[in-house]
Length: 115
Length: 113
Image (cartoon, rainbow over all chains, first blue to last red; front, top):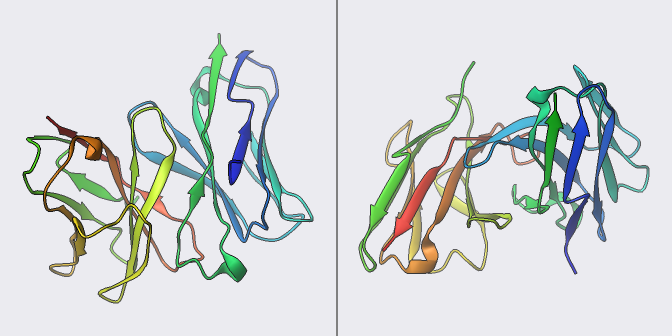
């Protein structure tokens, strides 16, 4: 089974709609990172969550880490074409956070926003 | 805004040749990483590096791979004898500490023919 699983794999929404992307781990997440990638380009850092129950927002994007620290969600409010891209969750799933920066990534969620 | 830079953006090489991929991390970061992404697959961790030493490496990072910080600003990944399966996008990243956010460069697309 996948260490870090994202759902859905792809998402097509109309501009203005809200959407949620999930990232689930079978192990405790010691640090959860959300990145955005455009096809063939680098990863753009969005947010990092470390504490169970933590929630962070940036512009119209909100990310949460659940209390048990095994799932995170990324929510986009009133989506725009500029939100289109591939959203990746990456996590430190080492034992007690001693993975020396090794991030394990999900397979990504491809978001398309139709104007 | 400071950013991680990588050169070249695209490298084509023949199987068996050595390649060096170069990265300039963000200037006040001391922790460095290499990841790779084979087309259509997940981003995979290769190695983390701090204080001129490898801190962690994955099973992908075998004896064909090496990393170096040759001076105060560059961080390099060397592949000694490239194989077809080394074709991928290679990303460099840096952070202020292992538990801080990692900032990624734009990547080097390596094509091995």
